[in-house]
Every structure is written in structure tokens, then in C-alpha cells.
Image 1 (tube, rainbow, N blue to C red):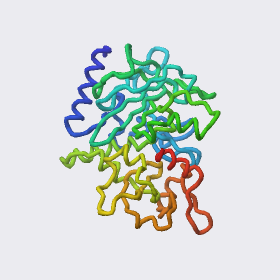
Image 2: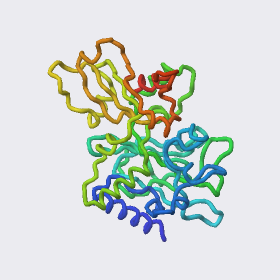
Image 3: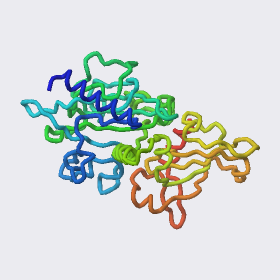
Image 4: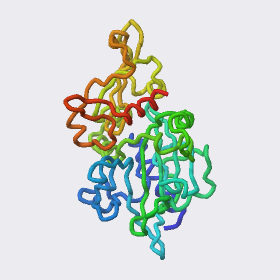
Length: 337
């Protein structure tokens, strides 16, 4: 298949998905994610592990290491065995960043795109790329299915990525803080940040596999898929009270904020966070909720959710009492900055 034919096919598939009310399309030609029992044909595992280690969540280091995306197996190789799968925009959007210096990131060569969908500003990240599409530049608008790169195996890790494990690392994220560079300089003085706000620490992922399957199931029921409701329905790990009417995450993501119900104004927010630290719902609260005047107060932790996904270490059970860890407090401060 010629490059132009591949482009037309990828765009046609993406536009068909969008027409069916599915905001996100698969970013490579690999379709095995939708075939029961074909997970080994879709996900690339880590060395000496099985396919679940290529999925999203606490799937590495015996459940104690977070993998904030999915690793998609290649389907096409050149004569030398290198991947040549085209990588396409997973949704209509704009290129906001690309790194073409693989030595500067574990992601190797990578691209970040911004998407405005269902009252949410979302981002997709495409990593370990062999090369960017010719002429790719920041600010370019791309349609769903339009080719933006070629799959590869670039990285700055000492062990690298073998030819056999070549894959696309793909993320669907929300931006923690547009002022990340200033926050990073203040809170992590002396530490290097080569990518500004597009540092992976500032992109909080949701599970792409779960999202793709939810889109497909919704379509099968002949219902409209809502990205906003999908995010809001994610299992909650813990809830906190943030005593600030200017909690910046709520200002930046109004689609995840409930309408205020009290006539007494907003003194802060009750924030529900999933196991990856995504604030999936913010409920405005008046001054009555903050009688103890604490800036941040842990309300509760779902113990079953913690057992399934403890690796972000945002909360911890100290004796009989749950507490927010230092890492968890740092995360909340990043969201609030």
C-alpha cells in the first residue's frame, strides 16, 4: 500500500469513527484491540513479561509502577525488521509540541496534540516515534486519521527498545497545570526540565483501552458517547476538601465541575480523584464545609480501589488512619497552582 493510500485509509477510518459519535480513533492500523482473545496481537509487553504490562495502570514492577498509556504493537516492518506503521491523529486537534531529540526523554521522539471535545480540553501523546511526518509543526491542525509520524523505538533509556519490541506508546491525558514550568522551577529547584509544560509529569492520563471499548459498546447500544461523562464515571480512589474558591483545576476544567447549589457562595471544592490522580469531579462547597479551616482535608479512601491500583502512592494507610502522602500533597498543589 502506498503512503497516500495509507493516509486515505487512516483518515477514512477516523472520520467514520467521528461520524458515529466516537471522538477518539485508534492511532495505528492495528485493530486487534477489538478482537476478543487477541490482546497479545495488540499490546507490547515489557521484557520477559506478558501483554498486560503493555496496558494502562499499575501493571509493572509487581503492581507498584504506573504505566500511563498503552504500548501498541507494530503490524508492518521494512526489510531490516524496523516498524513502518503510520501513526495518525487520534482525534481532530492541533499539534502543540513535538520533541525530535530522543536523547532528551524516555519518550524518545514524541508528539503532543490538543483536542477540544465535549467541554473538555484533552491531549494525546505519541511516543518512541521513528520520525515525524514531513513538514510537521507546532500549531498545525490535524484531522482524525491524518498521519503525523511513523512508529519507531526511540528512547533515552540505557537498555533502549529492541527491534522486536518496537511499538507506539500512546496516551490520552488532561493537563495538570499550564504554568507547570514555573511550578517546577519553584518546587524542584536545580532539576532539569527540557519540555516545559509538555513534561510527562504534567500530563495526567486516563485509560485509552477502557475509553476505546466504552466508545464501541456505546455505539453498539446506539447511544451517543460522552467523553465528559466517561471521565466523570471513573472509579474514585479518594476524596478531598480543598479550601480555596480559586482551585485552579476547577477553573481550567469546568466540564468536570458540578453547578453550585448553595446561595452562600463557593469557599472551596470537594474533589474526587481516580487512582492516577485525575480529579474526575469537583463539587463546589460553601464555608460550612470548612469549619476546621484546613487548606486540604482527606475525606475518604476507597480501600478496594486502592488494592487494585496503589502504585501512584498518593494516599497511604498509617495504622488505622488514611493520610495523604507527601507525593499526594505535591500533586494537589500542582493542580491548585
